[in-house]
Length: 140
Image 1 (cartoon, rainbow, N blue to C red):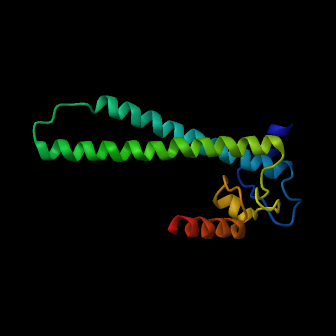
Image 2: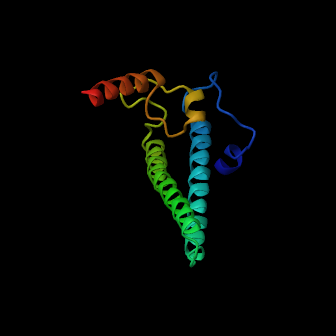
């Protein structure tokens, strides 16, 4: 029953329903799992491409260009690896009943923000305060 009622593709969480009800939690769980799956699939494609792409290029400029492309791809994959860790943390917060609430204030994170960034851990206001403090300390 649970699987049937929550897998509607036209459902979008709304402000006029109870915050982080079962339907919303399932919506965000599915969105996070799809996102993670896409990232992992891209990573597999990259690994295959890097393994298949190893070739001897006689032209130095072409070789340098290919190495730059590979380095950029590896940096992108490293960022995505970190993103997968954040997705896993968001999934744990769903399981723990903490998803959707700001880790700094305990207030609900807006549904708009969560839909745009399902791994968000802070309200927009708390995130802005955090970034301002971080900038001040970084400038010291």
